[in-house]
Amino acid sequence: MLDGHPENVPDAETETIPEPEGATAVIDTDYEIGQDNVSHAITLEFDIHKAVFFISAIAIVVFTLGTLILQIVTANPPLDGVAQPSGVENFFTSLRGFLTGNLDWFFLMAGNIFVLLCIGLIISPLGSVRLGGPEATPDFTLFGWFAMLFAAGMGIGLMFYGVSEPMSHFSSALGGIDIEDGLRTDWAPLEGAAGDPLAARRLGMAATIFHWGLHPWAIYAVVALALALFSYNKGLPLTMRSVFYPIFGEAVWGWVGHIIDILAVFATIFGLATSLGFGAEQATAGLNFLFGIPATNMTKILLILAITGVATMSVILGVEKGVKLLSEANMVLAFMLLVFVMLVGPTWQIVTGFFANLGAYAQDLLPLSNPFGRSDDNFRQGWTAFYWAWWISWSPFVGMFIARVSRGRTVRQFLIAVLLIPALISVLWMTALGGTAISQYLGGFTGVADAALELKLFVMLEQLPLHQISSFIGIVLVIVFFVTSSDSGSLVIDTISAGGKMHAPVPQRIFWCSFEGLLAVALMLGGGLTALQAMAVSTGLPFTIVLLGACYAIVKGLISERRVLD
Image 1 (cartoon, helix red, strand yellow):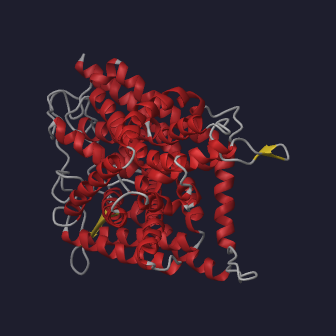
Image 2 (cartoon, one colour):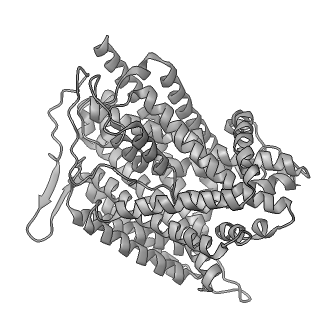
């Protein structure tokens, strides 16, 4: 989904949390970062929070091994030469269906609350509070900060869904509504646009932008603002538990805080595993499309293990020598691919479509956000509810990155930039890639619409000049985003499981990096994309409750800052 280390990101191995500058409502607590940790530096160096690390690690190890064992035990023989789902695969399918089918309203309402909170803070006096204190100055220039927010909006998710989602929504909308036994069976957003290609295009792009626009970035903004406020202004450790000090007081350093941080670890690692699984699906499909390499589970597993090994090497090399260089190269390649499609594709349609799509998004935002009284169950549950849970599971990872580069900005500046800049880049990306695929369809080429999700990007590029080069660049982008996401995610998980320490020992990051890959393998074998999506929703659900509590804590924390200023 996202890449967490663009150019000039602070190196977590040397960075410490700076003291507030000027009058702030610093929280007076006797807690010291690392006081509940255990450490060792003789045989294998480690420095871990006793409760958070051990409970998180043991639970994830047991889940990973248990899923692999159950996949073997519950495997079913082929029927008439057709592979049959295993018992564990059926379980994950049922789990996702149950959660999205019964709790879609909860995810949609939570997403709306996050957007409304951000807008409310932008227009309220609380927006004038400066992260880091009233005398703090930004750590990065405005251009550099914008560039890093741009980088946060690019990743595996945009590569996987950049073509497939607009095309899927367009096709579903064009097909209209299907009713069987009194229930809708189609996947069209809202009421569809049966037989009207232009209306279907508008609705398909509006639905896509809805999933990549204000709502996901409001989720990230809430986490990032909470972490920045309570670390830079209140002087607390950079972990999720610190956000809840206004609610629980000193109890956050006990089991209440342990549970919050454990949920953050679970959400992050399962969100990462989902993205790594998508990356493996698409990279494998691309290798098969270009070079004829078999797109089997074994190929996907070998790819995940190989890339996890590269990510582990980047962990050992450190941020400056490893992942930072890869991230810089990846951003250049992503920009080149975007510009290439805009130049050789339907350029005028892309340029005009960007503004038309924003207008369509604005027009359909409220109907798409409505959690009640709708008939488009498949779209609302299968797409939107999954997306909101996936974004929420990624929010500790992306939120911590955004928080670390945003010190010195006012809350108003912070929220406007975080909501708008990555969202606009995502809209441009979807308009260029997805809009090109839709234009190809309207021109008579139906190959993209007929292709599997993971192949749609490559089928679209095949219709453009130099398609072998552009498709190869696409594969490279997916793989390198894979590496940087794994490395960056292990850094965030390690910070949380080390009690907020920003420079925990490298062996711990190697552990988390390795198990991100193994977890992706286990879920891939235990049901493929459905299993990955099921676990993203499962871990996103409890963390949604955590974020709703964070909304209250943010407002309370900002009010105390305003009192100091007044």
